[in-house]
Length: 251
Length: 183
Image 1 (tube, chains in turn green, yellow):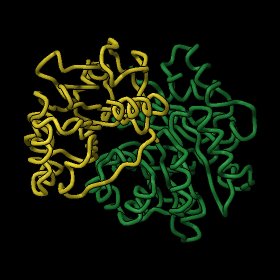
Image 2 (tube, chains in turn yellow, blue):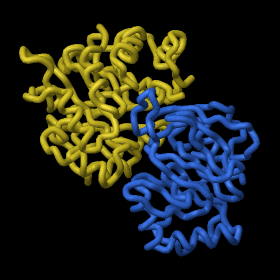
Image 3 (cartoon, one colour):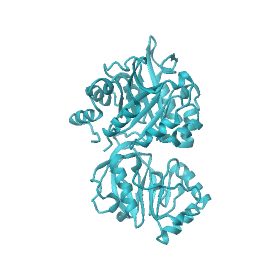
Image 4 (cartoon, helix red, strand yellow):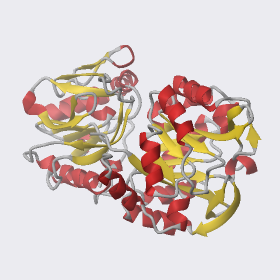
């Protein structure tokens, strides 16, 4: 049967791996190649690599870096950060990525996702939605969380699904980096609405949080970063925990 | 990664100089077949297979291309190298999300050299929305469960196909590539 996926996210900015809290106060945590090597050795299910400074600073994906990372990655590698058109997608895929993650550009230019999926197939597009909480409810935010839109994330997820996204990664900005648990209510809303796979993101601090995201949240995969950087928990530890609670995982 | 240097050919001249050919594929079958037909790959591949000059492994869409026909995107004929049809995965009452994305087990009985050293039930990385139905049971090497049981590895003589991505499936995926190259 299909296993749930445990996916470390590597956030990258100004040549270092970073982690923040609620998309702010970024701290440098380790060197990139070290991180990749450790995760590859630990037999993770997939890796997501995001250059979080790319959109705010308007720079292009670092293709040489992506190439280097993909050389040591023997599981699927998803790359995101500043991807705004099909030419960039082509370059990133050629450099070795298996999937691309699009966020701000997909919001700002609604045709982007369908352009990518028409050319390269929907299996290589992950639509990323960052969510904050406003007095009117959940709203999608772009530009690394600095610009709050008027759009409800569930509606946005449905739009992206219609346009041909292969998967959705949904991130709670307030919970990100806090290690207090995912926003399972938000994740559940998205999982109930779309029929493509949903990756939960933002807030994981313990293995139990992942279990909640997969059961109450009905996510198909759990992404996390802080818990691996700041505690001694590991992707394998997560999978052992989940297996013992009856969730199918790959070991 | 399996210990050999691949060459990428974008036209069929020189294909006969190779002993092993991998037919990858990402995208939709009708468009892929159109391209293979127009470039002359289809005839060349069929000829080399018939003359027993190459060993062929189709991966993902590449495996589906081996079939007689597919219903994808309006429908099209495949290469017809392994009798079978390709059709959309249909969710059961478990409401499985489509596409089938992630790690899933491939069950086999250990009889085929392509899967030497790979335990039955080992997880591989899948990402697809259609699956292959083999006409002949003897061509089925491994099956996987998603929306019912489907053929995840198919093989007929020197022509084989894997629905999952061996190149994305960690150590056992690499093992499959090594087994293929050793054939």
